[in-house]
Image (cartoon, rainbow, N blue to C red; front, side, top):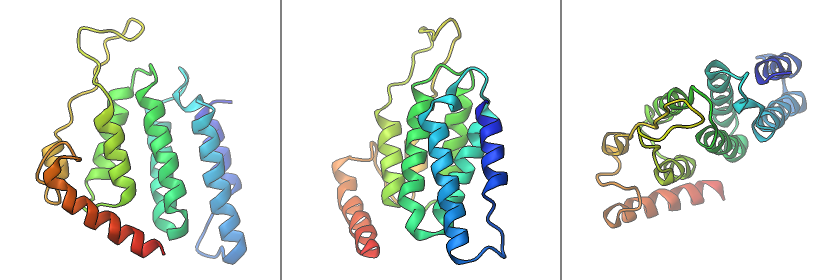
Length: 181
């Protein structure tokens, strides 16, 4: 079975509708999170027969899970980080499009959270593949992200851990920590 088939089966088998209440809804949400994590950790999401569409559906479902219930947010974002790291370390032909789509989806929302900081640090630490290097015969490049535009209006300087951003980061992380307690 490929990632798209597993994802489709998972979402059909553990639906969460408007009428789903209490423990049943919680069980379905955990089933989706666990199943998507399995798809990511098995690396079938990054296999040759996987697709950009499936990757985007996985990210979309994880974002949805993270915003649906506050108590699922950290786990959903942990999976988003795993999927991001997986695609960045893969040799799929759609790697650049996946990163571009992820960046658009996450950074179009201008508010910042601990999880978005973690994703930013992961993306910043990745070394772009130079245009002259090839990955198994195909010319893949991870485009330089325009961090300055992605950071604004919250952060004025790049990289994120620039000393002039630290006071804003500290405030953001303190507010996030206080809301989790």
